[in-house]
Image (cartoon, rainbow, N blue to C red; front, side, top):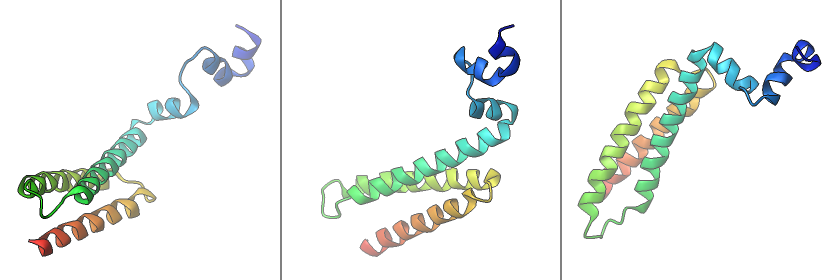
Length: 114
């Protein structure tokens, strides 16, 4: 065993290209990884729906198709947010709830345009 491996096992492990400290912590506690993955999926779903909403043109010939696509994205985002809320940390929960409110605003604005 080398000097580094004996006295600095984390440094030695990292020098060999093994897991970082954060990855090791995630492996020891997969619950944290699930929380983070669920939050990231919810965030991505929200961003997809929001981005699509911002590109819809109400007087476009494709408006009906765009609206259907937006509805699907919003529904998927809601589901991802609900899933994430089931395992969310205290710091993630307010942001997830804000995503829900923002999606609700998008739905209300689209309904007003119709």
